[in-house]
Amino acid sequence: MNYLKNFYQASYPSDDMGDEIRFESTFEGLLENINKPYDYIGVFDSIVRERLFDQLAKNKGVDYDSIYNLYFNK
Image (cartoon, rainbow, N blue to C red; front, side, top):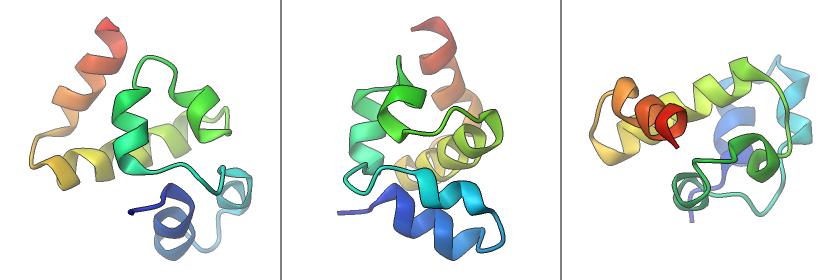
């Protein structure tokens, strides 16, 4: 599993918001919960969401806009 918290803390070690990300949250789960990412992530910060969406897009081989449009269009 590709855990959000592990990725975020390794990629952004100086951002303490990573400590707040739910342990069990994964990139697959984020995609499944794209309509409610803040609840799923456990952090209500748009920068954290954007960074995770960016990595999700990379993981899926799509551009950021594709992921954002899923979220925005719900």
